[in-house]
Length: 275
Image (cartoon, rainbow, N blue to C red):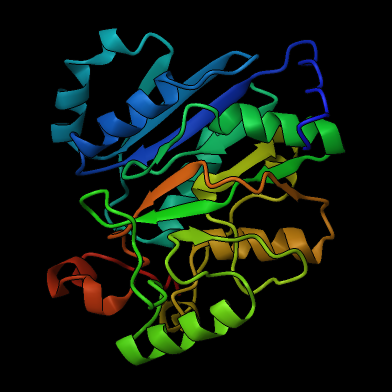
């Protein structure tokens, strides 16, 4: 949207539900909760936090719920066979859609945050282009919050692969040396949209839910639920638009980052393949 364009008004009954999944991050998730609370939007914003079978996190959040009046915290038990990984995350993300009655769904991972204008900028773009899918660019941060400026793509199986991918993305304008922003390049489909960058119509997510099955090949390629959703939307030719602004502050260190940055203990607790 250009500076001369006016934002379209909110439609009747329009609202956003933000879905956050959390397990063993009772402190980090509160940063995400504060980020949602700080959103400045022209529609009601509800936050749905789904606790993935962690009594410790439930106890911690029970002590702060009064500070987040528009946040609902729900506890979701695991089946005995379920482990952390994209399959479990997908099931919880889909559950969040069914528990919501908002017209729009956004996701914020428990270790990330948004700038206060994130949701409004997405709403403005979605309305201006009459689309059901809008997303932001991403600003990468180290765990301590410093801009990630290393010449390596964080999602790779080795340092050599990370350096090769980064050089390729620099050539394509996706990465810019000295910048921590992953740039949007229309027509370049090899870098999927991160789940926390999306604003999606609920009706779209009911028709195209997150894929819940992942193969050994997906594990080898670090294919996550973000990737599968994005490519399903691309293949179905769903119109989508980017704000061109890095309003998602993405902290590196999750399970989908380079295996060389994840401890063996963390890797052992993740079940990528579901078959």
